[in-house]
Image 1 (spheres, one colour):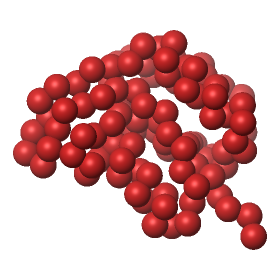
Image 2: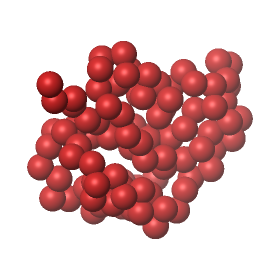
Image 3: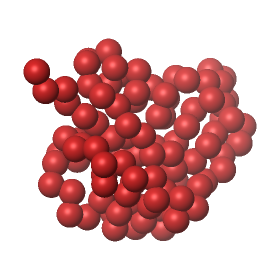
Length: 101
């Protein structure tokens, strides 16, 4: 049996209720092998987001390449990108991906 593989590109939620953490929980609950690329780190809980720090475009690109160069990803789920320039970085990095987005 082939296991589906998904990549989530999003922010990290320290409270665990959203972002990368929530995506990976959802993937796992459905029997999907989850991989991740973090675009930003947040300080948040169930009441508030108190800090957001975006990662560099180079870091995000390197993460995407590392995953796509090695793992046969079937689909990509995109969440928090944060800025127009990060949208461009991610679009460039996943160009040529032939799975579902």
